Length: 134
Image 1 (cartoon, rainbow, N blue to C red):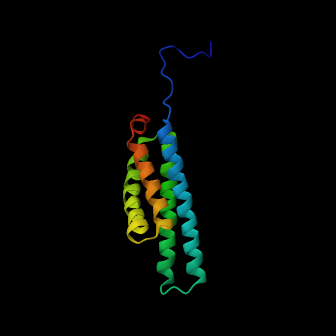
Image 2 (cartoon, rainbow, N blue to C red):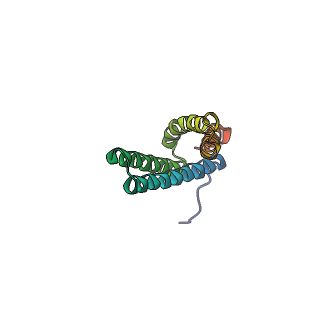
Image 3 (tube, rainbow, N blue to C red):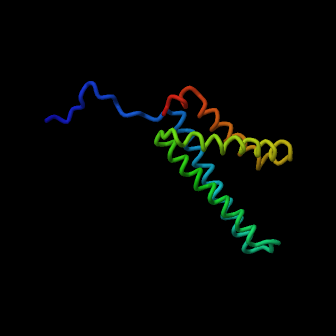
């Protein structure tokens, strides 16, 4: 027996460049959100919040969102179609929050990175390469 691949066997599906870039952006977002969750938890524990449980719950929610984004980013890296919809559902409101925070509230240092990264991920996912890369 030979280790050669039969000529009629299709090569394994490769993930498109657009999806790989989108996956990296989503994983960076997940890391930033995890750092934010840690900062929120430390501030809740070392500060004097009116409601410690509520402050810790917000930090926990941010950490949960970071975990979900991380899983979706890993799914995009592998070319899993099931990762696309959750990423879109997360990125659309993130773009709105980034616009609101960066443009309307006059905090571009905080809002523009959120807005630009969310828009970049959405453009990459809806690009022809992003749609066919699965």
